[in-house]
Structures are given as C-alpha cells and as structure tokens.
Amino acid sequence: MKQWSPWFDFGSEFLTEIPLWVRFPKLHMNCWSGNSLSRIASTIGIPMFAGECTAKQSRISFARILIEVNVTKPLPSKVPVMDESGAVFEQAVEYDWRPKLCEKCLKTGHDCAKIPKEGIK
Image (tube, rainbow, N blue to C red):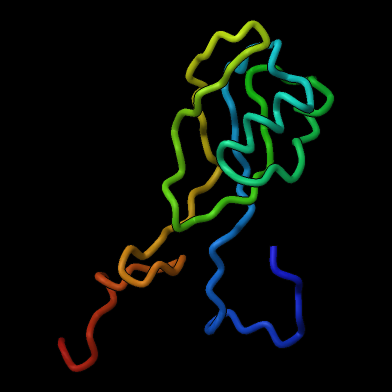
C-alpha cells in the first residue's frame, strides 16, 4: 500500500496494488489455522487480515481474507494447497469484487477501447 499524502492525485497515480476481499469456499478444516490461511493467501498476494467470522471460525462455509493483490496480473480462480499430510488439492477462490483493468494502458477503472474519440459522432 502506498502511504497517504495530501498531494495524492488520482489522475496521475497508477495504482497496481490494491486490497481485495478473497473467499476460499469449502476450505478443509485442517487449513483454518492462521499459518495455513496466510500461506494459502500468499499464493495470490500479501495477506492483510482475516474477516471476523474467519478469525473466530464462526462461519465455516468459507474463509475470507483481505489480500493486497497486483491488479495487472491475472487473479486465479483456483490455487494449489498442500495439507499437513503432503497431499495437494485445488482450492477454489472467489472475489467479492474484481477491478476493471484496461489492457491497453494497464490502469484500473476504464477501458481505452470503449472511450469515444473526440470529434467522432
């Protein structure tokens, strides 16, 4: 994360790292420790913290972690996970929200291909 500054200009700044809430549905119960969740989240980006229900294990249908991700790279829909016995399985990954990324200029929030050119009606 970039340190806040009163001179921050959204127009000239190019943010590539943003925090996203990521869900791991039907995560195996032996993967719910803080170390395991951090290791799994690290395959996507930098884990920041777990959601309250995940931290308290009060909802076990999915684990939810806030992860700082690089939005210029593809966001995976599955990640490989090795459990404590050494077995590897594919863990599904879901995102509460995915930013739009312009493939031309690599900036978030718009698509250069869809911006009308001036003078053309």
